[in-house]
Image 1 (tube, one colour):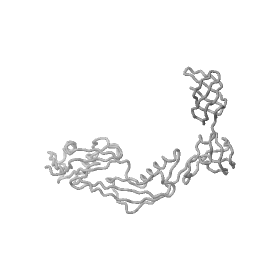
Image 2 (spheres, one colour):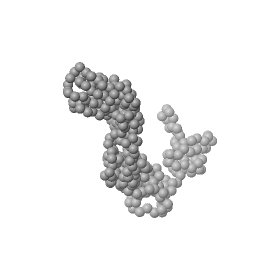
Image 3 (tube, helix red, strand yellow):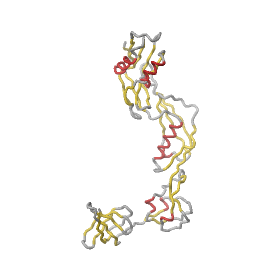
Image 4 (tube, one colour):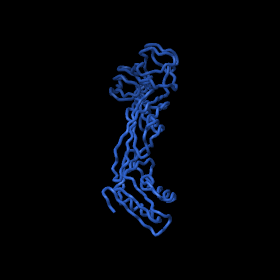
Length: 321
């Protein structure tokens, strides 16, 4: 019997395994978290033996949609699957909507899943670092079940140290006609994060205008949660001098450093040519433009009067492929 928005199918079998009428009702919308969609993800059961319910629940339908994506099953497709699934049951009423929308989700809402999302968001802003949520205040009035969708609202990359972010929960539960009520609840989550990273620190007191040397710096794990300016990276320390003094054990920031070119226009350097046949040829050359480590610069070969382009390898060497 077909009604608006609802298809009801009653299946009778010649086999009698229990008394009374069981009901298998498929929801109009469902949220799934695993890699495969099973009937148990879509259906609610009433008055079915547990053994039958367990068997039906494990029937696989298809691969689950990815996080945020939707897959739609028609009532015709589902009824064909269910006819086979309940063929050994005396009387089962199967209630199907016109279609069932299956929404993929990455994780059920919990303090742990929220922490994991905050950690992922923060890690994008600090590269090779270790992020930890050391405190998360969880509201007691949160209303949630695993058939609701949730999302964090706000820029997670700004959740450094003490933070407050929004949590939105979407209720997808539908009525008998399969219409979602669309209700959205908003909550505030607060807490504190800590970011640890291996950073360069001064091995001794360093003076203003001092050229930085490899032996002036060591790399150690430090708490960088409250550091807003960029921490110096290894390439920043090459051929640089200090624009300010730096105390012993202080973290070196990019703003403390002034880069100086490894090579400058007019400098005589060694040109090294490499071929595909694994031979190397060296010659002297005159730099035509300033460059830092790894930069491509033009170099004049005074013997041939030709200009070639090479990569700065040191203050004395430029490599040409």
